[in-house]
Length: 331
Image 1 (cartoon, helix red, strand yellow):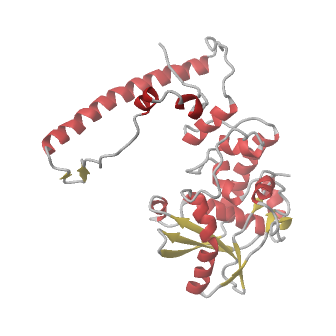
Image 2: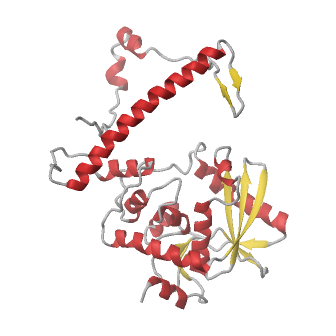
Image 3: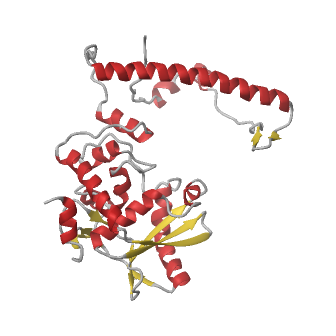
């Protein structure tokens, strides 16, 4: 029986409470999440997340992520910190704005028939026939751009995943934009989209269960994952007789040459405008504008001179910087 058929059988059954989270530490909660695909993983699993590639998600789910950089939950410069801190405020503001009462779920939920489908629901809406779940979001100046046309695709996938796991019909997404504007968006269950989502998540989970990495997607996330997965032990591999990879290499060389030529064109066009601007720091055109402002003077420490004058400091404050692999092309 296919996963889509299993999902249909569990359509009207409530989600299973896999683990109670009220007394779980953050590390324990993260460990539980590695046992399946959660709502916030859904977009990454199907290759539609702007933040994480399928390959990086695969590393996490296969517990091969020891060398991946980890976000610090106490770092006040990280959006994750503010999202966690402001979640209760967003939920309370949602209740004030809509009149809908909410409550915590305090559990990792599991789909009744598809074991790898998990969900961590921010809040459950109580006493309302039209909506049953609440997803709380925060967006700063950069993130708010993704919300200009409504709920971003990766959040829609997260919510549809949650509706699939819980069997519910609708969810509200409450997003606090730039710390001063709360928007509420209603997302209705889409069974056609959920069926396709389950197919794609099943394909991703097969990579996990077979310990086979999914293909790269050209993102910074995939680059991080590759460096973690293959730190570099040395040696040479011969792809001379591999027609597919030889073709990929030829395409890479051609694309790099095209990029270099276009960068030269871009530099000349930019310099033409800069020369025409003279001392002005802003120029307006029919279809847009540019700015060319001088940044403020900064200050720093002349480390080379400092160590020359006080060489005894060098061994005292020396640090080791881990090396990284460099990708160089020769033709």
